Image (cartoon, rainbow, N blue to C red; front, side):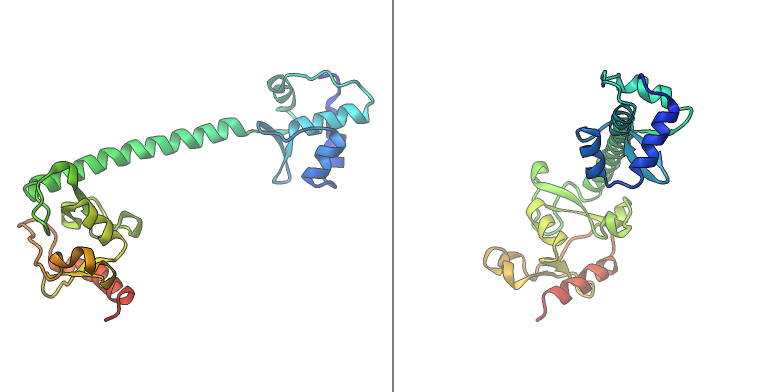
Amino acid sequence: MRVSLDQVKEAVDEARGLTDDQLRVKAKSGRSRSYFIMDRQRPLPMKAIVRLAYIRADIKWDGPQSLAVANALRGTFDILHSVAEVEQERLDRQRENVERWKRDGKFRAALLDLFGSTCAISGCKVLDAIDASHILAVADEGDDDVTNGWIIRTDLHRLFDVWLMSIDPATGRVHMSPDCMDSYAEFNGRTVTLPKGAASLSDFAPHWAEFQKRNPA
């Protein structure tokens, strides 16, 4: 980098009065995707700022390495490395997903054992065709305890999740939405089989209330 820190500071001062697009045009710079100079909570693209400093000083651009420039400016400016930030976020999400998969695996194994690997509605025992379903969704603060789950066939799980099917907590009977009756009438009115230690019928009350709102009689 052939410009001084003071010249970079002057470029930052000028950039404050420009939009990001105006800055890129004036600095003859493309869109920055890596390093940014944080100025009053605003991320200014480092390459554009340094190019602007070169232009202001009438120095021919020599394309200095971004990492070297960032290291030279760190003592004076707050430098944000977006690639590092994005990568850390990706790794955090990956770790969360791994933990989620582990919890889901334990949740499914416990429910399969409790329900005898059998769908509580259809009686299906094909492992690849049955799911461990949350009664109160995790997104709604439902937990992974077996008392918040049941084993149901995959297609029925999907219907349950979108309130096209529910369980009457007073009777334990399956109710299908009118939209599904052509294909799922055989399940309408069936009584669910819940083993000891599993969820109780009262746990279906919130889902049932929402089902009734979405499927008025």
